[in-house]
View 1 (cartoon, rainbow, N blue to C red):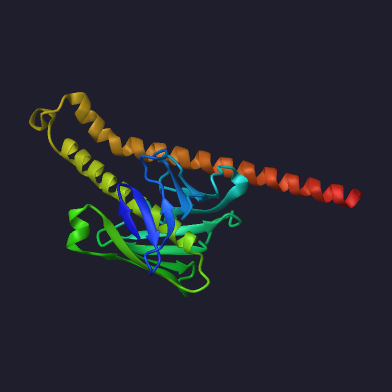
View 2: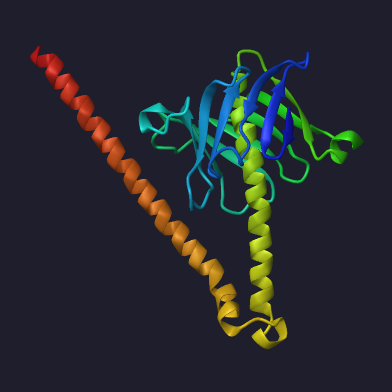
Length: 242
């Protein structure tokens, strides 16, 4: 697997291309599309904006419809020193226990994909460090996938992990900038008072907005679940009448 400019190229052991992922310059910034070797879309990865756990939804083909949702991915917690993602299949609506788990390190760019209870390893990814790759600005990874595990599923998880890695870098930068502005008086920091005030309030405002967005998202999911239950009940009643 090679990453360059936000795009991915996935090859097998014979260097035959089996998957591609459109770079961010070719798609909306909150969307990635996994393609087969012929350029046909397999799944679409869409980021849920302004969620505390940086949630991604994965849909069949290029769909965005709730009925085509395959699985969702989110951080296990808001603040992480190491990468830990929870994966929920579409039928796992309560999301009390994840179906799969991804664990790794942001810095070393390695990860392991487990079943939700961590009893079985499904895939491993390790970064291949070479001088040539560094000079041309490419990251190359070796991915080992167990038998009977969907390659496209693993690739989709790695793409999301890579994007979350960049989000983590931006979050750390924002936190450091905020600390600098809060820790120094406006005159010493060389910042206008309004900007310094913004730095002091930034963290609280962000957390409040994330909480509001999470609550709205939960309400939307509850409404969707209720609608699905009503529809199923109507179908059952119609079948009984017939």
